[in-house]
Length: 355
Image (cartoon, rainbow, N blue to C red; front, top):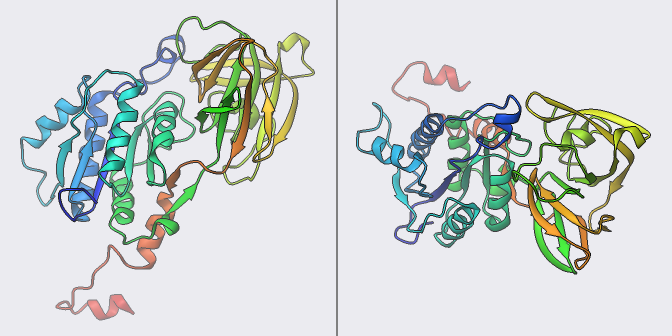
C-alpha cells in the first residue's frame, strides 16, 4: 500500500532506452518506439483503474515517456474508463542504470503491491536485483528478450491489479525464478536472470555483447531452443526449461578448434557459428570458478564487469531470484473464481447463464 492512503498501489517502470542499443544498427533489430510504450502504459492505466488500484507510481525520465504520460493525463480517460492517480517519483534523473535502481527502491519503500516493467533483459535484471519479493510483471520492449514476454498490456494490467488488490493470492499467481550470481573474491557482486558469459576480449565498443570474438564460458539459468541471444547457444544443444532445477555451463572455443559448432542467433538477423568444447549441468549452490584470468563478464547480454588476475571470480546458480507474475495462471484463477464476472439478477438470462 502507498504511504499516503490505504488503497493498493502499483509501480510502473518503463525503460525509455530499451530496444535502442547497438543491435538495431549492426543487425535487423526492431526499434520499440516511445509512442508505443506510452500507449501500453495508458492501457495499463485502464485495467488498473478498473480494479480500483489507488495510485500508480512511475519513474520519471528525460527521453519522452514521462512527458507523453503527463500530456495524456491532461485529457479525460477514454469513455467508460477510470484511471488511478498517477504520481511520478521525486528523484534525480541521470539517464543511466542507477535511475532504475533508485526507482525500484522508492517503489518498495512506498509498499507497492507489484511492479510492472517495460523493458528488455537488462532492465528486468536491474529491477530483480532490488525488488525482493514484490511480484514483477515482465513485459518485453527490448531488443534481445528472453526473460520478459510479449504481452498485451491490457491483460498484464488486469493480472497485476488482481494480485496487488489481493483478489488473486501472490502464491497462486507468481513463480520464483532462478538467478546466476557472480562473486568477486568471495563477495557477491551481481546477478543475471538468463545468461552470464565471460569473454577474454577487452571492453571495447558497446556494452551489448553481439560478437562471438573471445567468448570463453557461458552459464545459463534456462535455455530455450526458440530463443535469441546468448541463451540460444545452449537452447540449440540442450534445451532447459525455466522450471528445471539445474542450469547449464558451456565451455566455448573458436569454431575451427571445437568438437561441436552451433549456429546461433545472437541478435535479430545475426547468425553466428559458436564452437562448443563441452556442456555440463550446473546444480543450485554449485560454485564454478571462471577459467579466464582476465576479461569481461556480460550479464544478460551486456558487459558489466571487467576483471584481471587480481580478482577471483566464481559463478553459482540459486533459486532465490525474483517473483514474476504468471499471467495465464492469474487469469485462469480469475476465471475459475469469477473475479471479473457478475450476474445481472434483473435479467431473465441470469439464471440460465449461471447453470
